[in-house]
Image 1 (spheres, rainbow over the protein chains, first blue to last red):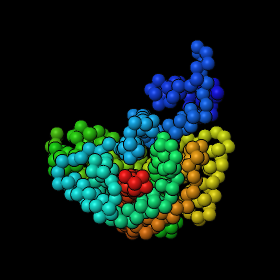
Image 2: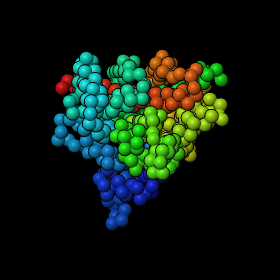
Image 3: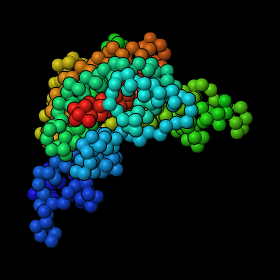
Image 4: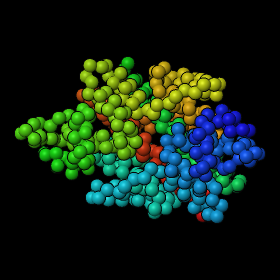
Length: 206
Length: 206
């Protein structure tokens, strides 16, 4: 298909598609004339993935570039590719000086040990959770994470991981992992806010 | 306390505090001299809340202003105040033309009907979930939301709503609702990504 059709089908404007091509986020089409290239379903799929990560995942273009580089790098061991993609999905969090931070981070490390979870020492999710715990404590929000651990564990083990083709080609596995993390994550967050609205209306008796 | 102490305790820079004062996001201190004002624990708490919404909730300053206006508006019925706060927490989503969108939005409306959830017709969460479903379908991610509905329902009804003092002063209830939505939401999302890392490492046998 021509770039105009690719734009219509993906909902991504032509100048934006050209930007993704220049930045290497989208592979080049097949050049059929000096100023004309043909695109196919792989281009459409990649554009839909970028759009999902931008709009649904609210990732930055820089993070999306990292994710795509991880999907495409065939020289890395799979675990490292998944790790890179995972870490690109995590917001950057600066550790803060002081005892509040140290204590929250120790709580996170202890939790992961107790659960026996295989999360690397350098995973940015550790600092991300520590930051949330610091804020909870400062604001008097009860820090009882067990129901959240249980819900996360069950959804990932019983649903999400089963949508990932671990025995297929590597880029398909990484792409499925990234899309699952972002799309199911957003669905869950939205459903939680809906349940909040519904349940608080009920408790207020209105 | 002086503004310098308020800054040190909250971790918010003095020029930023002055900006929040000008914008009405933080109430004025007690003027003790022409160029000096005294602040108290209510100012510290408000700054910590703004910081949590910015850094943990990734809300925009415009959304935070809406949330604070809802917390402070004593003329509105409680349900409306909670609604305004809820809606400020939801990202703006543009409905898209075409059948894919209509079908996804109908699926959302049917789901809410079946569940008997009390979610208003104009709740932005309906379009937000529709957008996620459109992307899932386009990208071949299975759209089975039942486990997510169940997890969301249980966490909200059995944990989060119990942290909200519905019988106390209204601003305390709204503040607790907002903080709970944002902080537990972030904790759950981070734990899901940790579980993803751990479980995929296990399935890859590394």
